Image (tube, rainbow, N blue to C red; front, side, top):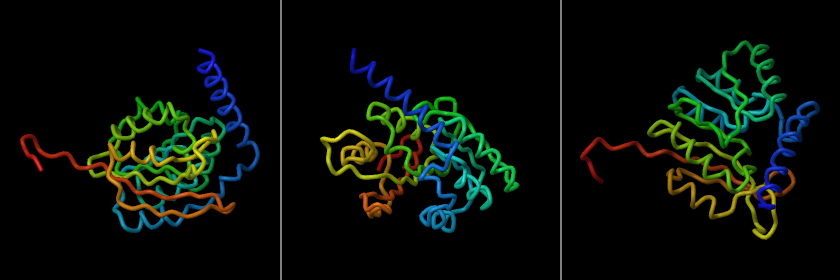
Length: 207
């Protein structure tokens, strides 16, 4: 009981902190789309995309400018306000919603691409199964999940990061197309992943 209260208080504080980060310049908000997203756009035809944890909308705008129909979601109201302003200034049409990444039940798919630049790795452990359930629901058959996250090397320490068991959990729902390990600017282990939801077979057809 006390652990649940502690978790709820910690999550509320986290929401508050993220909201007010956007009154300054969050260190993760570079205003530049990563090469991995640009590569994906170059190699795939435009469709519907959702940016989960979109921040101030940099990657939503990049996708929209490339012809994608994009929805951006973030739980920080200030981030969504700034994203709407940036999209208007850029002259692109996009939908922005204040949503928690673990509560996407009212989001209607299907999406051909879900993009996640450092959101999933920060979701509390208990919320990751909810995230993945909703992700699988809104992805189109054959749809992709392009995700970046920090890797957790010390499992005894709390905080953000992806452990190998997180990857194993993802693989129960999605197929891994590629994985690129590296480090961030502070030499923290990280990786890019491209997953794909397998196309559903017609009734009566078996592999």
